[in-house]
Length: 500
Length: 133
Image 1 (cartoon, rainbow over the protein chains, first blue to last red):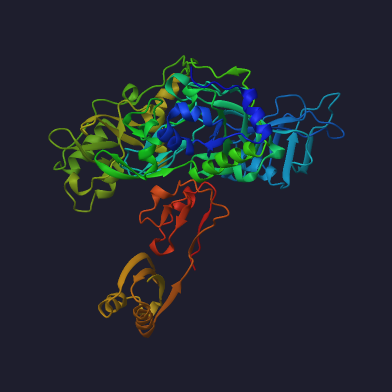
Image 2: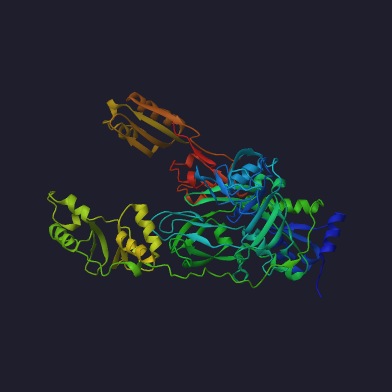
């Protein structure tokens, strides 16, 4: 009944130099032509590859002991803090930790790349001092060659697929999915699609703890399921480890995601042994069979609205239809380097430099990814807003509005049409400026481009808008732009009082 | 041929409609990419589409009227040694100056660039540079 191969048989073929290896891109056409039965017989290994920003990455470093010795309590590498709550001279430098002097321009990801490039890195550490570790501080410079271990240890890499992103708001937003232009102005996506390592073995029949992989240009290993591993939603992840000292900076790059933070581009590839016809079939999934969802990142909630389903083939084409409009698409993962990784892994196996390791245990297929337990609910705008908001019509007189605001002691007056829909806003400052100018109607002085909030928006998001636009109140509107209330910095201050 | 020209207006000619006059006297297409005018001087960056002799004529016309006209080349560069070909910049480019080639590498067509610079900070590894004179 069909073909069945073992890891040992495949490794023997690698030793003998007659192993047949193709990339995950090449296998698609092969299976289409010959069918999975024939391909399972002929092909031994399919190589995958991906190269994208993987924020959950970092490296364990061991610096050796100073004299007199120090038990580091806090440590900075090029002004980027690393975690040293383990023994005396071990530290974990995380990719997204920002420089304390250069902010988002430089972070943990850059430190890792600089170490890999053999550059000198400034080390600064402080300590409380003990009888055995009397030293209180140290400043020195190190290179990767000066330290003991440098082990890349990434808790969550190689997402099986990822949600594509766009933005419904009328302003540009800066997210971990890159710069998203206003009014669905662009779409971004991540992942290598047809080359995606985990998506080429979606039932995890060959991938698990102990699988030898391509990691950052060297040979590394899968050490566990990744954090947030979510197999039932086809969002599997892996935890990986490898020797940083052997890696290649072409496949490990520090990066800055504009106005979001720093990260690390990681190159990763998994060889998939074609053990049977089932594996040959799933490994041959083409980009039009790999689906994901397009989400609205304009909504700052955990569960963002799904705008539509989309395939990687559509995303790869460079244009996607959103709300009846053709929108340009940016990949955030490099398909060129993903392909290069799959080719390199293929070459290593073909030349007998890379052998397959049978996993000690396969990846879990039923782990559930839970949301955070919150003992206090995060308040929404509707919980703290003032309602109903006092509003005015554009034809109302400036003098009567001034009187109203003075009597009722508030500062923001939304201007609405007869149906209650927002047209503009007038603040007490606008009224003060208008006095004595000869202007009479509110329509002459109102601000038409109003920053607004929605009832179901978290208060934190509204507070961020106030801060970013340097204003003190937001009319709260529904989908038809009808004013439902108003939220001001005072409402938010009261909330903080309540929390305390 | 598409070329960028930086026009420098001295204080004496700031109030003259020189650009309009030049546009009337030439068949080339002129596109204003950037303009900055203050009390002492003015600078206008234009993109000009037309045959080389027409472009030379335009430069001469400006200079005759007291406007310094400098042809700009390689104002925007994509450092291919630094670029990771990720494509984060592609969908932000309003003119298609940045695109993904058949081999999935990112390409920059300088002629199409209008120097809006949206791509510059969006590049995760700072591979795109704009050097204004």
